[in-house]
Image (tube, rainbow, N blue to C red; front, side):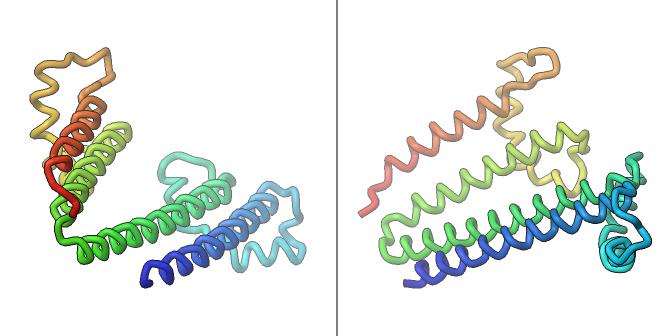
Length: 196
């Protein structure tokens, strides 16, 4: 029963997020048109953008200019940031719903709790692999407080694989192999527990 209400809530949130995303993209497109002089910056629309939209875009603009970008592309980056944030919000809510359904299933069937806990543990390991790979693309230091946890959780399985599997130029295949090995290990371990 609780999940049906949550699924309905999630559907409403998704619809709201979609409309907020469309509005954000339209506002960013309008700001871009004013900044690129396709719309007069001295008309009503231009004044609205300078008074309302530009203060919202300042953090994006500062970050973009510090990184060496051009200030007139700020609305495009702002639209992209808004879309990514909204997708992350929906993903987080779906994750919470999934965890809630697993907890309710585990309460209804106590024999399933080991399988659920194993699934969570392997999910965290997969997330750590993804964070580690993506952070390496952006040159993040492994000692950074944002990614250190992913190195701590995955180094035990990647270090032995690196000794066996050579890199192909700059391409390290060990995270891919570890991903598949985790899947095999998870299915082997979960098959040992009856769900009754």
